[in-house]
Image (cartoon, rainbow, N blue to C red):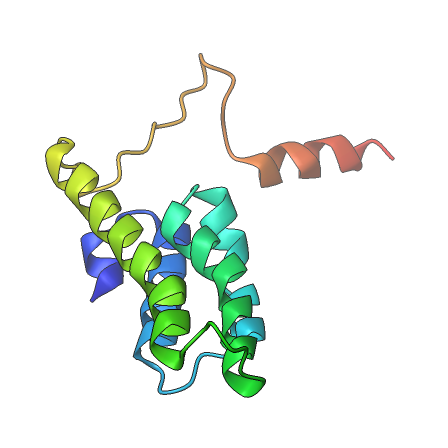
Length: 126
């Protein structure tokens, strides 16, 4: 479903992986390593924050006096949800991307053509 909405396959893969992680019942900090390259590539502040704040989850294993489990979860997921909502709001205000990908047609005049025939032409003289 995400790939249908996004013409960019790399962005669609990152969004699909992020949605998969958020829908999973357990989110260990090292699971976020899978989505971290996509978050860095597309400068997604929400997932970059979640990758860093996931370390707060260790406070649930070894409770510290001033931090209740509710506070730890709020510190971990509250700003993430706010950044995700802000990103969705900003995307909603941008003009929509075209539904289809436009590719430039290669022409002999432009010098841009298929790579494979040129590689074969270069190897014939050897």
